[in-house]
Length: 314
Image 1 (cartoon, rainbow, N blue to C red):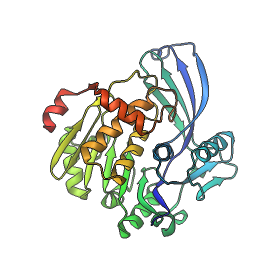
Image 2 (cartoon, rainbow, N blue to C red):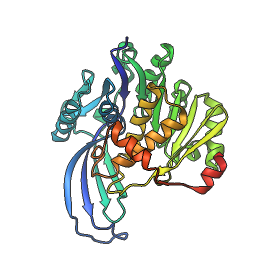
Image 3 (cartoon, helix red, strand yellow):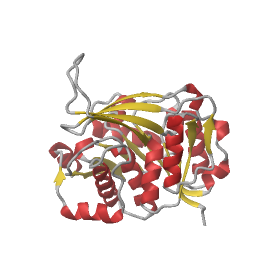
Image 4 (cartoon, rainbow, N blue to C red):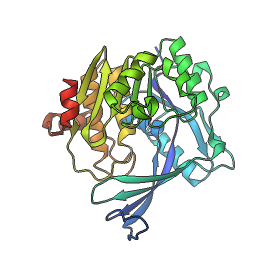
């Protein structure tokens, strides 16, 4: 039996949230309502979602030795995530972001910075860090390091999920070892140059051979292709307060679905529900909920669909 259900290798960040009544026009001014520190980051937040759902979870990454780094460490410890292989980099600030949240819509604008001293290198990844788990979740930022982790997982028959939202140099070497690719809505078009997102997903999947090629669609849900067929899952309607971290929570929920034998459609629906619930609170992890809350939202079945995606996937 594996020591962990899921191990995540990738980014964490400590955000400064700035709440404004509405986002100003370019070069304009707007008084802010509140500001606060909030832990986040793609993979770290996905792992918090996994832990909240009851999975035995491990996180691998780097953290700065400043106050933001300590906030991140304290947050991870508080969820019961194993952080034995989190490296605290001396004399280095943690990755940070200033996130401006428009209270009229819940949408956010992100300004972020990650010091070079936080870079995770391939030498920082050893086989036993990966083979202790049933599933590996990665992002694309430290491409060589996550690529090594994915290669180790592939060699040992461990499925790999990936969260990627931008084009990283060398990521073409990572993709052949990915089983579940879930991207932002922009990535497939940027990666392939094909403007049609359906065709772009097909091109990526057929070139690299992953089991599932998918993308999240924000307020319209998600779409995925498996065994030559597209599956569309509309978003769940909630009172949206802050969209920060919704995609990260989606990925954590999807990991849970894979590990618990959900069908692709079930995994998409469940992941959409958990992502929507996170949007009902402030912060990247502010609204992470468990199974009962997700099932209750799914039972209400109030959803927002994109007709074009729905028709093309049918």
